[in-house]
Length: 156
Image (cartoon, rainbow, N blue to C red):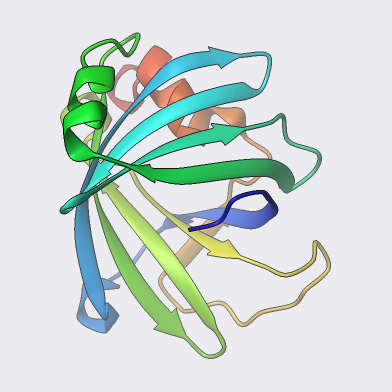
């Protein structure tokens, strides 16, 4: 797991079929202990693992990220203390050309929303877009998971 790094990613809406191309999927439940002024402290349970993640404010499509694996029992306790409930989604890992796209299909108050993210090594790195990739929303804060708890997709 990463200890301290800069995360560079672009985010897109999904407009077509991607599941047939997925190499794997995971169910994710996550919540936020803190979400203020671009800083977040997230607790995530994914399959049989759990993580605590700290993210800093975005600068363009880059932001600081620190993550560590924690015991599932600790994550369950922390999830109960998250403000605003939890995000529930399935993440599909979809390889395309030289990149891996992570496609999140949301449930609950965010049902109907599907977004794809691709991590890059630099802000200027180019990549080929699959046909199912739609409008880019990297700069739209409404699509951040922490914001989706405050303003769910179903209420837009």
